[in-house]
Image 1: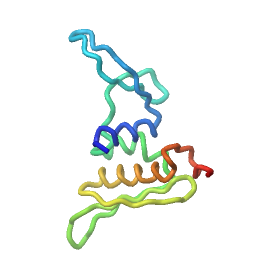
Image 2: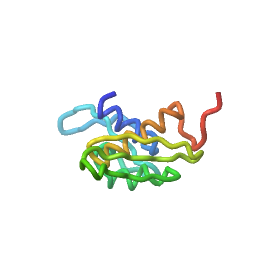
Image 3: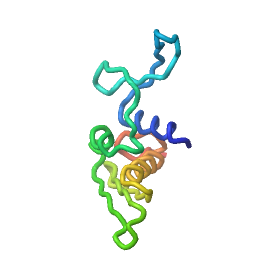
Amino acid sequence: MTDQEKNEVLAKWAGFAKIGYQNTPDWILADRWVYPNTDRRADLPDFLHSLDAQAKWLLPKLRGYHITRDALTGGATEGTVWGETCIGTSCKAPTPAEACAEAILSLIEKHDGSWNGRVKER
């Protein structure tokens, strides 16, 4: 999955809606997004690389989370998140934002992409 696709999965999970938008100066059709609970139409925040965007739109949807850095090597950062059912997941990445984003994506995948705060019934 590309970074753009990952960002879009996180956006949809956070409640953003994708719309088509015609840019009138150049008549270019580009994807725009409607922000949750607003009429604001704009490009998406960079959920993969911005802890600020995650703190505003993603982390409040979780039951809990924490970020740790390997103290011995100063290397990879690990992000751990929990959903409403206390199902947790951890992922390692070079930056805290990427670690959290990957952990949230993993949690979404565990719920078959149909996040509703509970494990999907089979």
